Image (cartoon, rainbow over all chains, first blue to last red):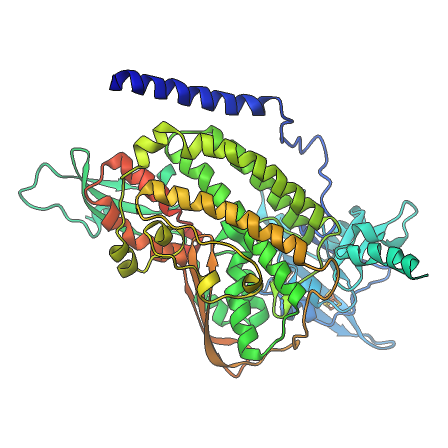
Length: 190
Length: 375
Ligand code: SF4
Ligand code: SF4
């Protein structure tokens, strides 16, 4: 009797398992075809760092060293000299060791002019870690390649077709909910 | 005898075999090594060794400013992301007297519970993998992927978001956050019966877990375990109820407990916790204002003196931190109290006398994460 019972239990368990698995067979597979289909990552996603230049090709960075001070991993190293004509400083060297960077985006938050930004490009896999010791040209190139980037002060910015830099529409911004809701609220009042 | 540290063969007991389980054993959830004495299939002695993932968290954090400490804490219990940041943030907020807006507290709590579900889903998959079932693992990671997507859209990273900060959170919610979470909860509620069929009601799981590795109430309290392991032994202790923080006083939920104390009870308690998390999240989705402040005023440079212990209930139990400030902008001392570390102390209690294959089931029911244990 108990043997019969056990056999019945086993059959029932296999049946339940099969039925559960069967339900899922017809669902859409969650597989990503990454290298062939580019992923559309949210604009706030931190995948890499870049140094943005202005539209006219001048440097946005004012070399204030805030990012260097803020970095918990201490991987940013900057050297600067006084600008002989006019105010401020000029960059001698701007290196980020992207191997030891932990992509916490503390530097991006510290930057007063949104020069250092986070981008969604994650094509940095390499066999040679030395290629990830990013210098200023590397960081500029990263910015030129990317279509959108994020920094807390200016929000998400996009590069338009003709090379201009614009603020992204509210639905791309984090906290864009406030801005999306605002027009509706105003209409109700009027 | 370096291969059997802590467990020397006993003279005259030639029937005992000494075996290393781990650190590369796939069922040890990372890098646990247990030196086990076996008599046939019975375990006679067990000595756990940890430290293979040691990264010196506490000392590094003492040489960083308070703002720089937070991203490091993420790397402890890497399965439950933002949950690790909260104790440090709470302790420093207490010491510096920083006010947190109500909405920020609710956002924090929502992320906290999302990560609890994510962590329990990982546990469910890996525990079943240890017992020899591959399918649940694929399903749970599929669902966890949705949570990580929601988190990434707001916080900027999937596993180690560095999202909480002193006074609130770093940035406002994504415009679709409320809709995404509501959709996910509906989806999860449809999935949960499947998981119950595959895990809790499965006769093989019953055969391997019921009555295996019984941890008595007294032993659990004496060893200082917490979280689902403690509650499965019949102690209704939960930091969320005992010392409420953030938005927990405003939501209703129960503490599921079981008196059995065996491996199955620990499985069952984690399942019930997922249901409770869903309940908390649904209440918070209702209560949280859609817009409003997400961050209070915090000074750009924190100078703190005094000491403070704050604890939270993360997916594994009581995760605490003890912060001592000496008036500078760096902590004088930071001590983390890891839940998984304390839960691991019951290994000799539960292993000795069990069969070797039961040891795997017992270990998976403790749900250790070695980032946090070794720190
Ligand atoms: S992301 Fe974090 S670790 Fe990386 S450079 Fe910036 S501050 Fe340093
Ligand atoms: S914080 Fe910004 S402006 Fe200052 S040095 Fe860094 S990148 Fe340049």
